[in-house]
Amino acid sequence: MVRISEEKTISLDAPNGVRTVEATLFVSNVSSLPAYDGLSGRIMVPGSAALIPDEGRVFLLGFDNEWHEWGGEE
Image (cartoon, rainbow, N blue to C red; front, side):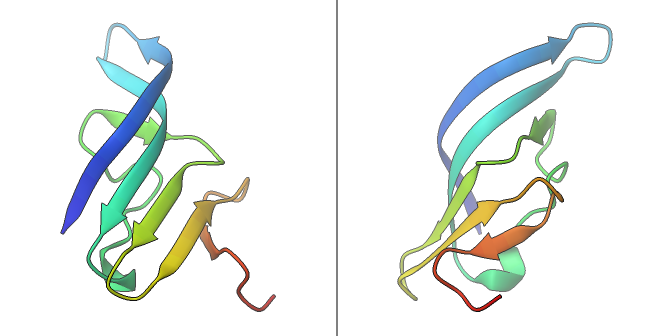
């Protein structure tokens, strides 16, 4: 499960209706982390965050468009 808690629109591709957003998500587990372009009508920018409350984990979207665990090993 993925729930969008907050999002800030950075830009809008008017012809396609796709928004570029900085988002904060709540997800049920690591396998539920969406791709940077995996939310309908949205493309997430680096710095977007995903929280997994049941596991106490936080992930940030990097400039490589991949999720990286905050405080995780390199």
